[in-house]
Image (cartoon, rainbow, N blue to C red):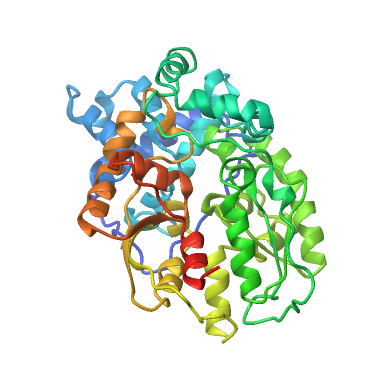
Length: 446
C-alpha cells in the first residue's frame, strides 16, 4: 500500500473527529488483530512521513524501513514494532497537527490510540518493567516520599550524584534526568478565604472553582496550588480544594494499564460531580490532568454521562480566566510588568484546542512580551527519566532550549512544570523556570 496511490484523496475538508477507544471490544487485546492494524497504519505512515520531526517513534519506524533489505515495511522485523510503540508517549501532536488521514478520512488513522492499544496489549501480557509500574504509581510514591522525615532524605538523595548513579543502575532512572522534590500534601493545609467573596457567573463560568490539585500539586510543587488560590481570590472567585482526590490516571494510561485508569475514574468522577452539583467549576494546574478529563476518559467511556458532565465542567486555569476577561469579570489592575517571557506551550495544552490562553492572559500585563514556543519538551510523563530514553528526550528538547537561549528573556515558563524542568535541565545554567500562574501573581503584586 502507498499513501499516494489510487483515487483516495489526501486530507479532508471536514473537521477531524476522534472515535471512542473501544477498549472493551472483543478484538482490542487480540495480538494478531493488533499487528494487522499496526502494519496497515505503519505502511500509511511510511508513504507520508510528515511526522518525522515529532517524537522518536516515527524516526525509529522510518529508519528501520530504510535500513531493511526491501526498503519497505515488509522488510522490518516485528520486534521493531514494539520499539516504535515504546517511543510514543501519547502527546497526540501527530493526530492534531500533522496527519492528513485522521477520521473522518476513510483511512481512519489514529496513531496515538493505536500506540495506546499496543501498550495495553503489552501491559496485559505482563511485558512491562517493574520500574514503569512504580513510576506511574504517583499517589503511592507521593504519599510515602511526602512524609516530612522521608521527604528530606529522598530530596537529598535525588541531588546526590552517587545516589543517582545507584538509582540508575538499580531502578533505571537516568542519573541526569530532572526529578522533582517531594513535600507533604500541602494542598490540605491551604485555607481559601471563604468569607467576603461572592461568586459571580461570567460567560460559561459559574464564578467559583474547586482546585483538583493532582499528584504534582499535592506532593511535588504545592506552590502551584497556593498561587492558584491567591490569583483566583484576587479576581473575586471563591475557591475550594478538592479533598481526598486521587491521580487523574494519565500515568497509568501511558503505561497501558487501562483497568487502573477505570478504577481511578470510578473514584474521582463521583467526587468531582458532587462538587459540580454544589455549583463549583473544576480547574487543575496540570495540563495533562485537564486533558484526561476533557478527552481521554470521554473517549474511553463515551456512554458515561457522569464523565461527560466532568468534561463540560473542567477548565485550564488560564482558559477560565480568559472566559472571565471576555465577560468583563477579570481583574486587570496589574502592579508589576514582567518584561519578556519565553513561554513553552506544552503538548497536552495544545491538544485541548483552546488556543494560547496563557500567552493571552500574560500579554495583558503592561510592558510584557510573551514569546510562545510550540515544540515538544521531550519530558512527557515518565519518558525522559528512563535510562534508555533520556538522551533521546534531551535531543527532542534541544530546539526548545535553543529558542529560550535566543530569546534572552527575563523568565522562561511552561504550564507543565515537568516540561519546564526539562528545559531547565537542557539550559544547565543554574536558572529556574517560573510557572505562568506564579508570574501572574507577581504581576498582581501579591
